[in-house]
Image 1 (cartoon, one colour):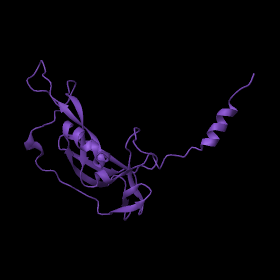
Image 2 (spheres, rainbow, N blue to C red):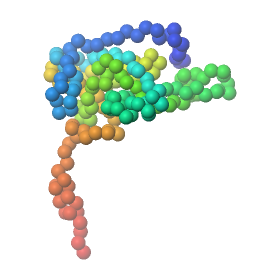
Image 3 (cartoon, rainbow, N blue to C red):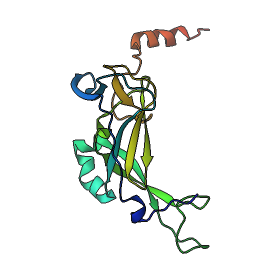
Image 4 (cartoon, rainbow, N blue to C red):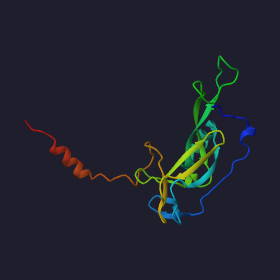
Length: 180
């Protein structure tokens, strides 16, 4: 299936936001998005437009500001000449290579906190229309924080990670030493 990348194909994007959401500021993670009423699994939480940043703009300005911590990696297809056609196909075995840019997700997208163990929201990138759609992964209870996974390469301390008692870990290692 070929994707139509023409501007006319995606001139209208319908935005949608679940009405049962509030932002709280006094949490262990800072600001966060919470359910003000139960949210059923698979409910669209938010459809967010994306502002893709240029590589130089990101390096010279965004990386040096607190805004950088709110950006997502965003793949941009790179056109390369194809021997069999004058324009590259956006899908299929000869898909274009991508270049990773940063993008600021507008709407609530940059407000979702991370959770390794209690993730209850999933997200899907639409590269062509430059939107991200967030959905409830499971039923979300009233008062529960809505969290996504940022992946495994975190640049901050994960407050949801199980704490490791350093003393117990040291004793464990000592107990494993065998003397001759």
